Amino acid sequence: MKSIAIMQPTFLPWSGYFDLLDQVDEFIFLDNVQFEKQSWQHRNRILGPSGLEWVTVPVLSKGRFGQKVCDVEIKVADFPVKHLRTIMHNYSKALYFKDYWDELQNILLSVKTNSSLVQLNMRLILWLSKCFGIETNFRMASEMNPTSGRAERLVSIIKSVGASQYISPIGSATYLQQDQYAFSRAGIDIMFQNYEPRPYRQLQPDFILGTCALDILFNEGPAAGEIIRMGRSQLHQFKEFFCEKTNFI
Image (cartoon, rainbow, N blue to C red):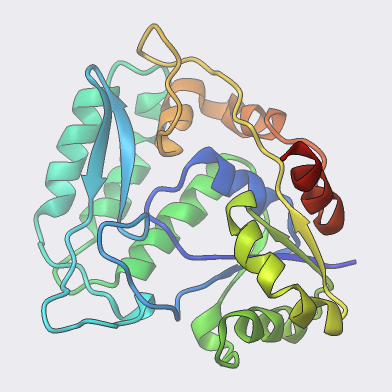
């Protein structure tokens, strides 16, 4: 049974994103949906001495309402320097910082004004996947010409790659429950990711959740991938998940 996950290409995702990516045969970047400002699509959080801190990629949005993620362009040419300065300030003392710093610099410093946000996000995701020992196949939804409509789009993507199992984050459960019949008619099983991040070494004395995956990479280095996998439990089956939720309520 071929499994698939479909997610937007977010900026420096958290560890749970990579856990999902690691569990599927093929991962589709959903880049042909509407861009949302102040979303994970172009920002995330790192951990500093004062706690969680946002890092945001500035993008061109004026007069571009409704633009798709794949069409979004980066606005400011010098933003990579500012980002790198912030990351260095917060992580230079991390145990494995120097092992990955040059590669991160090369990716960010290649960005110019009008560069594609999706291309930047993908380069970072593929680089982090390599660091975590993840070898999943990647494709772009915008290159697949899926049908319109929320459920129909997902079903057409899944069918086009020959998959029969769709693994989704728990956060998508509500709308997938509404669209379940479109999946069942197509013979597609829906499963939900079951992930709870395990504490790991951080520069701060108390473990803090909610950081992007750079945090675990710089602090745990070669062990980061296995630590991410340690937070994984058995997938929730669609029907069992909603039965459990109903009984709980």
